[in-house]
Length: 249
Ligand code: HEM
Image 1 (cartoon, rainbow, N blue to C red):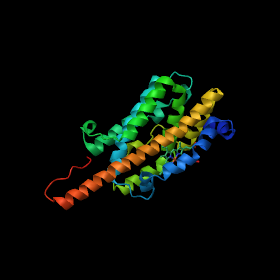
Image 2: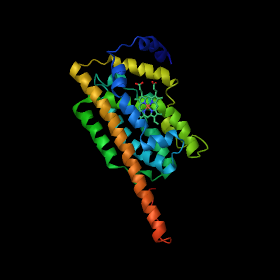
Image 3: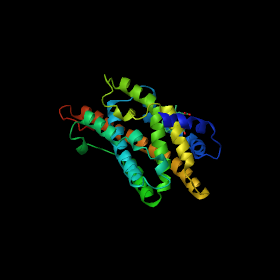
Image 4: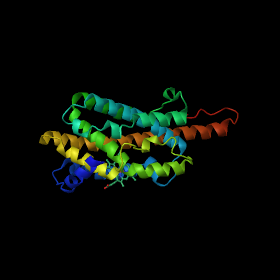
């Protein structure tokens, strides 16, 4: 894309004062922790199960619904407008498609989310209303993550779950982004163009650490939900082999 090419030089001239550099630095440790959650380790080891992935999709649906509604509502806000790329980045429709693939047409009635996901969405809606300049921290955390490690994870997930095509994996595909690397450069330069007071900048950096933390809590809560179900299943099969076990659908 022409715009992606133009920003390449700008990206090469970044300095320590740039929001994109600062945000990467302050979230570095959180990124390592996120990568090392049980759920993300399952992905990396090529061991993600269909149950894990389906449950993750439910939470991603709630999170992106809140994030994208707040970005849309605040699209003219000076802290949001430069990083507002719905045509390239919006994930909600892709997730809906995947949910329909895995759960069927009545997927909306089958969505299950842990408390941590509700907490994450609550925070997104709160800052969307009270402090839209902080939305950049959340958009960065999710979208740049999806365009980075997420690309590899998509290919691994396909293999791990034995899916023959990329059906059910629309979430990982960005048809509006021809080069993830160039797009990330464009995104970083747009982040750096946002005018922020020192106080606002510190607030955004703190919010980014919080965004990672919220994601980690979602992954941990999902894992807990799964182990509770597995234990229940084990108990059911030990105590009564005739009673059908209630599973997460
Ligand atoms: C960037 C891997 C999980 C958010 C990256 C990069 C890799 C990566 C290789 C590119 C680093 C670079 O260009 O310097 C992974 C792996 C993960 C994982 C293997 C788990 C299996 C996550 C999670 C989040 C996340 C859970 C957030 C919820 C990000 C962000 C960036 C990034 C925001 C962009 C950093 C920047 O350039 O400023 N990740 N990641 N990642 N990841 Fe992850």
